[in-house]
Image (cartoon, rainbow, N blue to C red; front, top):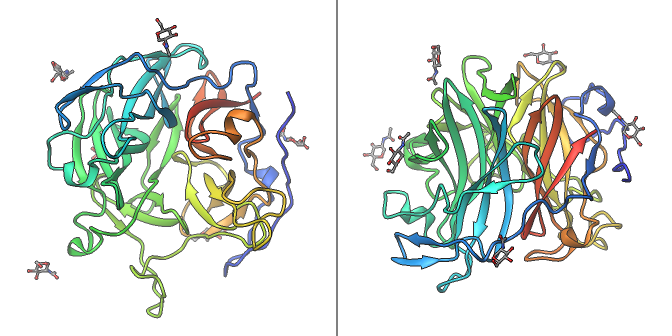
Length: 369
Ligand SMILES: *[C@@H]1O[C@H](CO)[C@@H](O)[C@H](O)[C@H]1NC(C)=O
Ligand SMILES: *[C@@H]1O[C@H](CO)[C@@H](O)[C@H](O)[C@H]1NC(C)=O
Ligand SMILES: *[C@@H]1O[C@H](CO)[C@@H](O)[C@H](O)[C@H]1NC(C)=O
Ligand SMILES: *[C@@H]1O[C@H](CO)[C@@H](O)[C@H](O)[C@H]1NC(C)=O
Ligand SMILES: *[C@@H]1O[C@H](CO)[C@@H](O)[C@H](O)[C@H]1NC(C)=O
Ligand SMILES: *[C@@H]1O[C@H](CO)[C@@H](O)[C@H](O)[C@H]1NC(C)=O
């Protein structure tokens, strides 16, 4: 198995603060794609679910499964993955399924989704695009799930809690109460909450008396919270900010690079000795017009950044190159071609396991060996 490319050069980017660490001093390590077992999960045409909104039975994971989050609970890896049906006008409503594994490779799936659009207060935000791209952290025996509610037009970051991963309370929009509701119709996605790894659990951790989250799908922004449910974006102190919502960009795309078009958080962020490590997804521009010339237009690859752990809006390290990029057939061809989208990071039996969506169709695994 070929090791993934890893460039360790210190880079300078558009930032008022210099990057003080070299990548080899803080990145998690080299992830190796597990070719012998990948993809570890694909769609399933056999499972059915009575959709309470549609009022009919659907093959809820028939079309595609992808973009999973993961955690260790009772010594087993639990994966919460996005699954799409192919019915109705939308032909791809997303629900979230649960699969459990004792070895990280072979998963037993629950026959029905554990999180889905229902006839509830969240329905106006979730129907009929659905509940997409889960990310999970925990605190005091409660799991906090951030996910994208998609009404078919607008993507909005939402939050739900559970004690057992099966019964959930939806709390609505993460920015619903902030600034008197003025973020309600802001496009928002991908909430990666800042955590500490404690005995295989990723525990939400306060910095300067607040919980922190990175989010966004263009630049990456930050938000803070007292309760992990109601969040406020960090705004730009520059009053002449050109951002419609005056958000403070923590870091953005880089012209000519694999991350030239957009950047978007990956799994939960982790406080480590050197700082907060955030794995991020990114998309390439046209290779002939501002993108990485060696990657096709629209390719999703992933990099890593390091943020100051006492001042989380300060970028202090960034990998010059991607550490994972699509190059296997199931990563190149699918619902959306040329995509690896990393979202599920666990530390299981002292090894890093990274689960990722491939071409928005299947799920694969990379491990630091
Ligand atoms: C990662 O891979 C590169 C290139 O093969 C190698 O130089 C480096 O030492 C590796 N890093 C670790 C932490 O294994
Ligand atoms: C669906 O059922 C068929 C027939 O029993 C079986 O061959 C196939 O493996 C099943 N698919 C999955 C993903 O379990
Ligand atoms: C978690 O538990 C600690 C100690 O019991 C408590 O101080 C804290 O308020 C709890 N946090 C939340 C968000 O429930
Ligand atoms: C979860 O919800 C189901 C169905 O509503 C209920 O039967 C069950 O008792 C609940 N379990 C827990 C642990 O709350
Ligand atoms: C918040 O919005 C409500 C309804 O539009 C308005 O009545 C209220 O004055 C606003 N509060 C603030 C602090 O802007
Ligand atoms: C992190 O921020 C603190 C201020 O909160 C500063 O003193 C420290 O130098 C910063 N660390 C790095 C590595 O830039």
